[in-house]
Image (cartoon, rainbow, N blue to C red; front, side, top):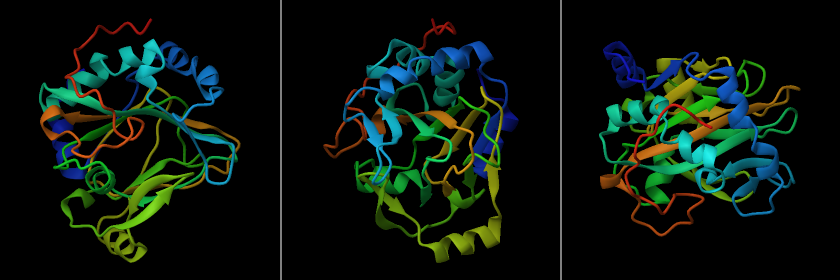
Length: 253
């Protein structure tokens, strides 16, 4: 799947791009199928909500199940990633964020690069995050909110903790207020099968899911091999395999 010139321009200007109907219902069903067994595993790759047994993220999916290993090489993801970043890219992190109904916790205001640079030692804000909606994402079940064009600004950071134990660099609320006043807010919503692309410096957040409806989102962060992490962090935070990915065909089976 190649992005059009208009889509590339939107990503450059706004900092994000929402693409509807990229994956079929059958594809989404296949991607959802392994989740139950993966969640049941008592492993470090399953991080939990703070002070809870509820799973927040299932991590390193491409090393745990073949369908996700194929998915990160699928042309609907890898081709636009290469178009944006160049041909030599690796999967920096591969996960599903499981925002379950009633129990899905919030993610504080942050930019991805703040943590990628300070925790992982990534030199430049080049990485992109590509999501696939595995549920319909609505205004009710904890969608991501973006501050469009905020990736052009210098944004202050403070050290925080995400969920059970993750180091996360967040943004002070006075800075968030200033940027929202200037640029407004966008809620990233769409039906299952939607693809969302956003850059490393875009300010974003998602609130708790207090609705009855789950909000599962697959996420892969692609990064150029030339921009890889320089600190020794666990592979669940930043994968150690930095070999360039080779494109596969469109069949997930």
